[in-house]
Image 1 (cartoon, rainbow, N blue to C red):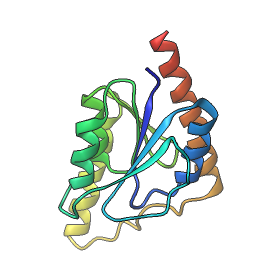
Image 2: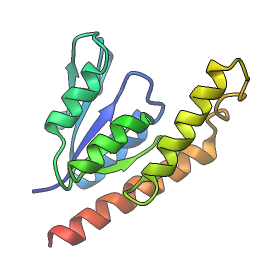
Image 3: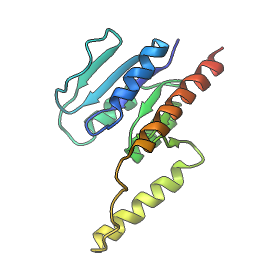
Image 4: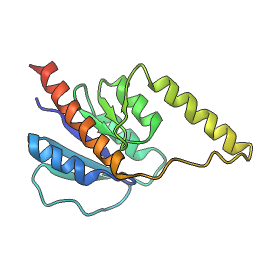
Length: 152
């Protein structure tokens, strides 16, 4: 069965790129969001609107993503939960989350949260730029190829 792409969609800047890759490979895409949003009128693209509750979208994705699916998210705790389910996880900047780097990502997230809690300004994330979009496209393409090889 081909990979299914799940997108943590509320703040995802690379939805059009994901649609393009999915169309090229004939993959299904499900966007999961807390409210309605416009999606392409394509048979392989669907929108799942979940309750606005805390982690509702995350919980829905974790309940549906399985081994050999692809999850696109910048949410590090969601990435960790999806990795536990065997999904391939990619951030919008093209950074794959893996078993070997998720611990560092969680530690960094915790440190930055502690710094903000102490009143220190960490400066926030760098602005999203065209290189991030390009890295994302490359990472998603590689993920599809990797998953197809492992299924063969």
